[in-house]
Length: 201
Image (cartoon, rainbow, N blue to C red; front, side, top):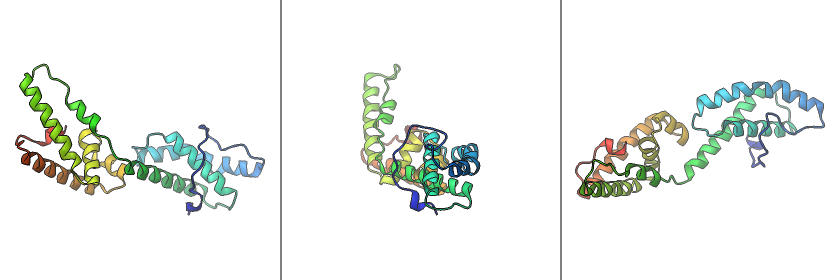
């Protein structure tokens, strides 16, 4: 497995190839066995991990890790090793993103744009509703809250939410249903009886 080489590395400026080497055989091996798979690696990353923001960085980091791993051992199946290294790196990135608290205040602010057709009283009522909705979402368990924010407020499809958070799509679907039910219950306790799914759209 490539786990032994998945250490923190200084990230260089993007290049399609690793740093120059004084070892021509090693450079030739990399060109013939690793670099030739750049296009298929990019296609794989975009197809399996559509939420990855910078595929160039992932490709370069994967190349560099394979390059460094090759200095200490022989690699029999370079393409499989490259794809495994890339997969590990992406999953590390996704776990890191998942660990960061999601800020949904901006998403809720977008709901509060003044509608010229609303009276002052209606606008105030809407602002109160949005404030309570924010409290309802904040009260959800962490995983459920992240899923609701990503799917309902940021508009990501269930499949992409599942990939980003490292969950099964069925789990995401169930958590959405649970989150909406809990939000509805929270708002009803606060005296807001007109809550519906479309309030999160």
